[in-house]
Image (cartoon, rainbow, N blue to C red):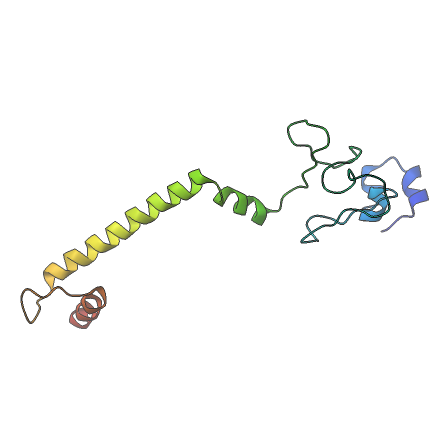
Length: 139
């Protein structure tokens, strides 16, 4: 149920407040960060503090470190994941896990290579050859 701004102002119940961005933003409505891929600064105002960088400290604005003038819109789950993956610590840990996985994979193929006979005894089989020979022997 949508109420007019007059009705919303008269009501004290929090669920009766209008939920559309135009009535929450006041005279300067800004697009929601979750709906717009590249928000642009609001038009028609003086100075450059109306865009991403600043604002009046209205309801729902996120502040970074309590510093005035820095406004960070709430991040989506995907954006949080992207930022976490961009850190050097995360990349280093991921590279370590991947290295361990590849070493275990290569060790498993080396063990299979020992079990399979080859036509020339000293021939080193490739991974695909090991896989094909092993599956043909198991089936």
